[in-house]
Amino acid sequence: QDHLEGARVTLRLLDSPPTPAWGGADAAAPAEAEAKLRTELACACAGAAGIVFSLFALEGHVLAEALGVPALAVSPYLIPYGPPADFESRLAGARPLLHAALRASPTPATPEPAAAACRGELADRLSWAEVEHWAWPLYDEARWAGWRAGLGLGCAPGLTLEGAVALPRRVHLAYLLPSVLVPRPAHWPRTVRAFGYL
Image (cartoon, one colour):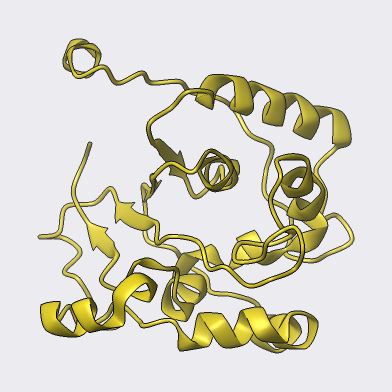
């Protein structure tokens, strides 16, 4: 940790409650535990220049969005699951403009510098490929909308408090596995990599 302190990096480890099934009846963690965790997280992240969070603690993504700072998602293993089969149809039905914007956002699968420059600001925004790969649990409004509103955010990533579509910036995902053991599949978004260990 000495090298982290020299670089002015502060490491804060916080426990989080287990993630419930997406959109299920148990979609909210016990209120007291979740409120306590979210208060601790907000205090720990106040003044942060960036946030690194585990896919087991997606609260980090919400706080990075609220603070307007860059974020990095990390996972110690490959995600062994995808979104529920009805995820896309449910999102499209509930939030058609958000769904359309995510679908229209350029997919960062083929990094072509000239094409990226032509795409302008959208090139740095969340895409459907990233939502499908790892970010879909963030669209469970039953779990996140109340806390997001308290932080001045819309009910889901990509929505303002007024309901207008404003896609959030991309968040890279680092699998903490050596790339020699996990060669990068072609279908991963460019923002997803196996980096080895931090």
